[in-house]
Length: 134
Image (tube, rainbow, N blue to C red; front, top):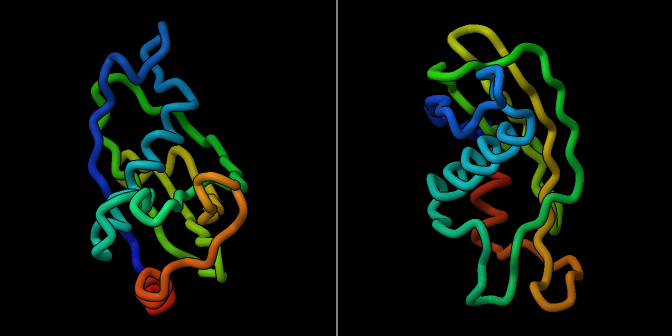
């Protein structure tokens, strides 16, 4: 059973360039929101775990831009957990307008110590929730 979370988003003027097309880096923001909401849907309300001195960081990213989104488009931005390691989680993500896939991404996030930046194991309950999702 895989866990997928889908987030509806409207494209606003602040998301676009002078031509009314979504500026490429904004897809990374959309993907971050979808990953955060996926974690929230699994019972983990914070993207970082500051009380434990931990935080998630993007460790690797591959993005493929296929077609543009434009001002006022309604998008569905999805995040799917595809792998869980000791300190990492891999997501496949996409932004769609209707049935048209606009952008896809493979994102590897790592859990690190907020002070040292060194990898830390995923908390047992988070790992169990995500492993059951793959």
